[in-house]
Image (tube, one colour):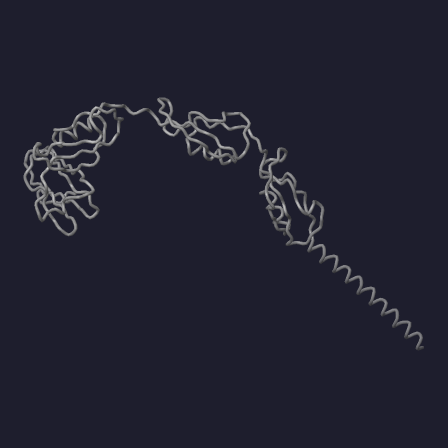
Length: 316
């Protein structure tokens, strides 16, 4: 009887042991299969695709670097570690090296592009912008590329610089600088603007032996060749400001204030007032006919403000 009980107990113990071992092996296999993945073949795959694939598999992407390759296109994988087919746990790193493309490429065509557009093309091909030369052109717009070196289609190594010839647009018309000495301010300005030059700084200096309110010096000098749009500075013969009002004298020069009355029939009362450093002074106060123009020199100071009144109404 006792032997029979021992036999049954032994069989039961053996059964429990087999079931336990089977359960352990089954759970271990399931857990192991869930924690590990097979590394895919990433060679010659684009970096964007690789990032998406490894992320979906629960793996991390580590870029070790980049190398030139004549066989693998730019931004594709040329090396991976671990190798394809290896089993690794999720969360582990997969190290890759990216192709920078062929080291030597065909020089792209930049002619006809604008300077900013060419910079984008050069950067996309790992090229740098070299020396920029400029010339006038009647057929090319400003900043449009006329020529390049190396020329289109030649082999060039990435990292090299490309020299460009850029258009400055149509050559400005040139004039012989007129003699402004002795002219009134209004005549001098009309002369400057009449030949497409730009009035620059207006300064004052007093000469006893020369007519008042006339030009006594100019820069650019008369007789010189000047291009359209050049700036001309002039000096007007004007008496010094009265003592106690020298705050109107500016070491930074003066600007020109111009105002033209609208056409009409009646005279208007015009008042021009200057506020500077807390002080106010009337630069002009009188009646003017319709169509007349007022010209005033205003000191160029940051804290100066000019107010124009027409029949008591503030205009500007």
